Image (tube, rainbow, N blue to C red; front, side, top):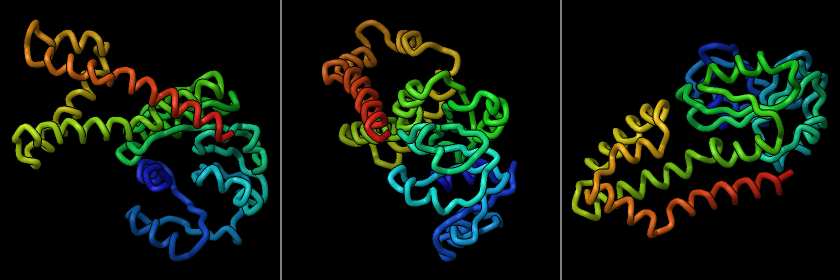
Length: 241
């Protein structure tokens, strides 16, 4: 996620990356494709800086003491880490953000919550990597984590399964992949302005191929499976606090 965020932000902001080893920082810079300021934890100061915290949630207690001085603002993308827990790092303002991997294409859907004084500035940062939505509570952010944060993984499963189904029926793998990618690209545009139920109704004709396939999805419990995925991810986000 750190690399995806940096890919999305690099055109609009100068970046400093703080890490454990010089080798890892150089590898990060090479993958990013632009020069960055590389700083080891031992040499780092966060004084008056805008910090995007992108580490494993379980590493927060280890990393917090290494970030010296007082940041202007701390933006955390740690799933499940509460605003209260972030106060182990000294900052004037705190915001939780939940982007997704599409940040590297500047197409992330990012949910935000935190100090209201920082709302406009926080939105401006994360809107450079896609769309952003300010929520009213941490509970809502945990639900958003389950939907837009984890969502790319769910859609990847569906994309792979649809492609596998086409291959099973006799389509060449490379053709199935081209069709699946075109499907998702077009669907991504359509869903911006059409309610999912209406979009489904517009495709499904009585007794047709879509109706047959849709019935199979319902019989297999795909709808309930998606809803349970959100529930399970939300529950996990709450457990990680």
